[in-house]
Image (cartoon, rainbow, N blue to C red; front, top):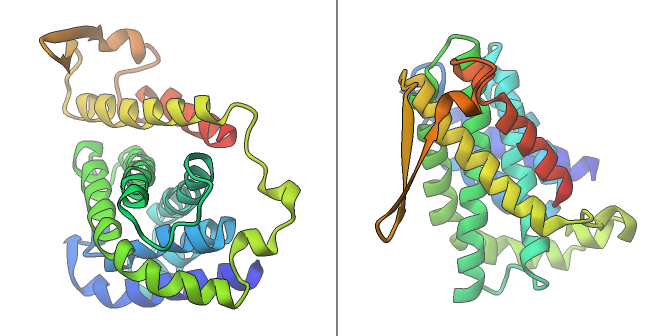
Length: 258
């Protein structure tokens, strides 16, 4: 598994570094076609893909000239980006992700969105806390940037790479012991809580980052609407650093449950 961590980190960093020359927010984030690697490596290498994504992002920052305190926040965000796909795929499907089919694509896209959200809100929270970039700018940007890349390139690369990795006997479920592959006791509850944690983080994080502190209305569709006083949900404070911390704790708990 250590070799797979190194392989994932090397591939991720190798594609990240050249694109540091195409920044979206200078010194913070850039055009990142490499964002496909945490997702597909997660599906192939399991936890090694998660750790490889974390270290690969750090190496990319070190070698690309964007290293700073935010790099360690980026490590955590990219760990979630590589952790959630394989855990969710095991929960939602008993089949391997390839060969591709329409039903598998319908699983892949929401899983990719979930992982992208986790990465976006984690990094957005961390860099907002450090006073580098506002949450309402960075979290949606990272989420969209990650999702679009992985949603487009993943279905193209995974069918090419997955059969070869399987033939070499390097898939994570061929290497890991069965007891290490067990799921949580109530994984479907964890799945639901994960959506709550991430959508809650994004919604209330953006609201607080923009200075919205009055009652907020949420449109449920079909003419239904609920109004939630934000101050009830963020009673510990009205800033992003403290306000969405309960949601990030829920993110951690739900990931342990799936």
